Length: 254
Image 1 (cartoon, one colour):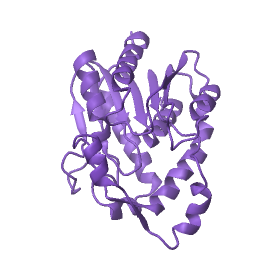
Image 2 (cartoon, one colour):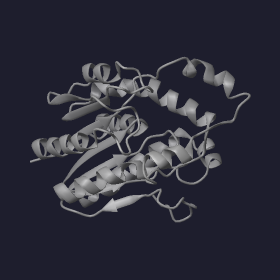
Image 3 (spheres, rainbow, N blue to C red):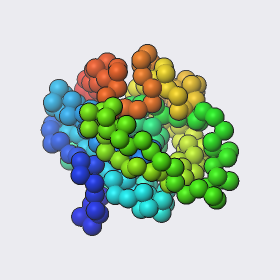
C-alpha cells in the first residue's frame, strides 16, 4: 500500500520487520487507533521468532478523522489484497493475525487466501448494548464522538497513537463488516488460534465460541485472557498473549 501521499501521524505506522522466510501480516483494529497498537507484538514475534512481520496502516487511519469518515469498505479490501500479496511474494509461508476489526479481516483472508495459519484477538461476532441498532439514527445528529486520547496515551505510557474523535459513519461500516463477513467463516480450514479477553466489555462474550464453531479448521484452539479487556496495547496478559502466539507459530509452521 502506497503511503507516500498520506499525511500520517507520527508513530502511527506502517511497520515492517524483515526476517526469515516465514511472514506474519498483522492487522490493527478499527476503533480509532493505528498500526502502533500492534507494534510491540510485531517486535516480539520478529525478535523471538525471527519472522518477517508486516503491520500495514489501513486507509483512513493515522491521518484525520475526516478521512476515516469518508473511507469506504472497498478501500480496506484493496489494502488487504495489496498487503497480503506483497508479503506473499517475499516469504515462503504466511500467517495472518489481527485485533478486533483486524481480526475479522484475518478471518476473511483465512477464508479467501488460505494462508498457512491465522490468529485472532478480540474478533467480534457482535457488540454489546444497543448501539448497532441506534447508530443509523444517532449519526443523523452527531457526526463524531470524542475519544479519551490523553487517557489512552497515559495508560499505554505514550505508545497509543490515534484520533481524539471517531466518526460515527465509520462505526456503521464496522457493524456492517461484523454482520456480513460471518459468511466467510465456514470456509476457513487452515490452523487457527482464537483469543479473547475474559473482561472484554466491547464485544459479545460468545464471540470466540461462536466463531470457533463456525470455522472448519481441524487444528483450531481457543485461549481466554483472564485479566484482559478489549484494548491490545499494554495488555495485562501481554506476556501470555505474545508467548502463546509465538508457540502456535512454531507448532503449526514447519
